[in-house]
Figure 1 (spheres, rainbow, N blue to C red):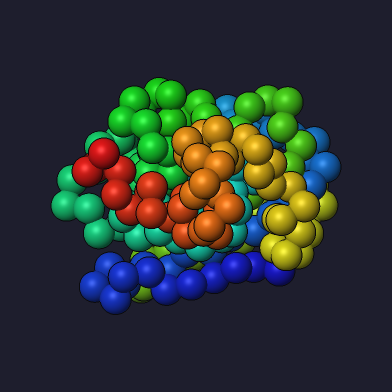
Figure 2 (figure 1 turned 90 degrees about the vertical axis):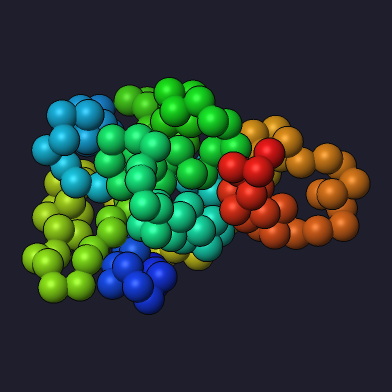
Length: 172
């Protein structure tokens, strides 16, 4: 199941996401991303509470007048983090060679050729329903990464707290 949503109206962009388990070629995918031969972002699902979390990070990236990182996809990973350290953000939210679950993210601009299917063809894994994301989320790790207090955790939804951190990153 593909999660698809139009981003900011002025951006003419759509975000598309798919969740995979038991991926056998993560190392190859990671290398292709580093070599810029695979045009996408692959995120660790263990740190994602809801697809909306990625939508917020992606929307910030597409409306930014100037990127902090080298590409729209590294900008999404950077925006997911509350850290202003690019390397730390990419390492925290990007995939490592030993990952087996991945969340694939592609941004498509209106009027351009779709890259999404090309990216998906290169994944050797089991596509699963996006609803299974909750099973892969490590809430304790999310609390730690986003520095959520116990009081905040009990009074607000984790998603609301995380989205607030992402949206307000430049003000912290």
